[in-house]
Length: 511
Image 1: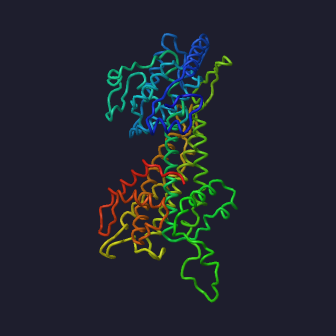
Image 2: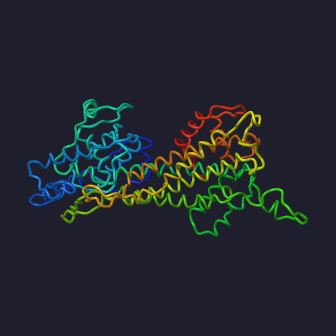
């Protein structure tokens, strides 16, 4: 059972978001939150504290009467719950909730302890607030999206409960949940922050790592199919480059292929007596999509590790405004809610995911083009050429989806638009960046699913399923449980979707 503590990592997010493990709040955390609230309540008397006794944004110049400060918080939540578009899927909302719960638990926000209690209850009971994709500019954080979360915490809005969309009030009554106590700055404390973009971003990194493992698997299998020379994966060659990612990808592929009987040693074929040969019948070196995989996926891995590090730093940071410091008995006003760190990392992540899409699409094209590979029929067609089409139809889908990813990879980070009466004159668009990255990752799984089906069909044609490595055979068996060998033309979309769902939901164990 994960415990909310000083620092959450990817493991804790995975346990709660993917495995559904309940969370606990230790007494030290509860005491810290209570002390923060008590201090801010006392400190704010006879002082001007933004968002406690002032208006918000460009209306911060207006002092709020003591009798209206609680209504101020309700007004903020209700007015900013203005999202549109598609609902954000529950897994990503849960991640956002966990991220918000963690940052509010640091004791830098001055919120009432009921906020922590109710939010943890919703997570443990799998009651998911309705939050829409559109609305966040990522400057005062995810104001609009987090307002939808706050709306649920005050007992209003809508939630997803046992697979159905229901009014929050109805679900709270069923489960015996009392709304949070709004007493000081609970509205602002909830909606000022980067937790939605960060939560989505963390789920994105988890899926990207899973995608990378499948791309390594497919790349290794293609090396077997074409009986590639293995020196491009060798320790000695890759050690001459200093990049850790490249070295790790090469190591992983060597591990994947260690019991294959298909990859070849160059010294057994080309480093022998070749006197008198003027033209070699087979390629001396493979195409780049086969030979340069460590150099292509190495930057992907290094970037993914960096993105993950930044997101974990963000989720364990105080990211609202103002910041309460109980130890120094002071309140600081600033801009910790600004989402530039997350926005930039999401743009970087979607770029490397798109590069993986491009690699998969090129490897797929290599397998489908008989003039390139010289060992397979056109489109890996196991039927009658001309009458049957093999994998021809699904290549269009892979090509189209790759093109969409290339377009979506334009950076969001540099698309600031001033708003909020120019109070927010430069913004991060971090939530947009995270959601577009989510789409790019989903697209990439489709492309890799098509490649995997093609790899398995190629193994079928070449009759090498008993010669490939044990890890490739495991992939073969998994795909064959979904897609039977086919010679006659089949309706492909159910197979592609089923394989996509399989690889999204199953981790290919790291080599």
